[in-house]
Image (tube, rainbow, N blue to C red; front, top):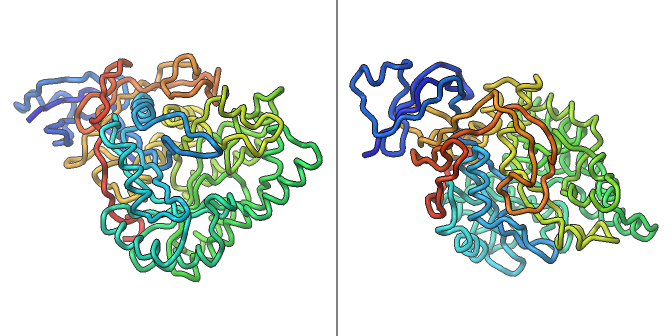
Length: 466
């Protein structure tokens, strides 16, 4: 057995803050002890990490990434090797990526394809959600089998007709199946049929620049789809998790449902909290860097998102990390914004950006850990193993320097993409060292991890529904 002590830091979880030493044995947290008492008590360790003056927080859980995802005639630029290494640099020790069922395929074929992509490649731990692209009798039956194997969440799309889109009848049937097998339905809530009409009209009128991507994917069409998804979930008797919520009106739909004690949950992402349509409107073709769906909104929507995080109408901040290089990938949409691959990089930046939100007074330190670590772990059946620091949990530990100052830049990030969505942003706080199951993967800003350390995680069902 190997033993490590993380000593002298302020341990912060979603539940409490305390000065304590964290005692790690054989990849698990063995105990939390009063500072300095572990050695006096005879607890010896091979390694000691000095966290004096630093925070000691759980490894981040990013429950929404898209690594090596084919989309829009290309593929997201981070592989499971590069993407999970970048996650480690940013203090995230668990990701949940999306396996994709292609139309005409079984769920099993899609899941096997994603296992093959990830196997032996990951520097941190990982699990899979399943994207349902073809809802039929066969795939509905397969949902039961996947839940039994630990793939307990299923994503459907009200957007992207002809690619991922499901109609209301298909969505209802999938929700009914989830209501019976304990799975959690994740919903991309945008009215894709109406959006396609607006896209066609914009292009016909010569409105081809990246800023028009945000203008046609209207906030009201996100809110309408969110409302419709909630009502379908009520009819089916199933829980619902709405991904990448970006608009004030959509938050209001979630708040109304939660006020009725419905099992409805919401996620937002750093891009909606820190970026806006001002970025989409950057001159030339620069706005293409910020094309994602749901799209960036006018800055005034941000206050509603921060409020939703404080009131728990939004429970989770994930990244929807889906990077495409500006050169050769985003450029596919020159002259036609609808051909710009949808997605932003961010898996390396999430924990730091949310700490900046603490500095700025938007959220508390414990809420930072709640929305970035504890809540996604509970939402997707990974608690108590992940998302906290307590005896028996995995020793996924981040030593965080709350006073370090940094400037986010593509020149210094580790994601495999040629730009940063937050280029030049100055923030306070930085990940210093990271342990994943007790093994150091980042040692005082030096990467010591390796492909293959990360383990696949079968998951239990949503722990908010227990």
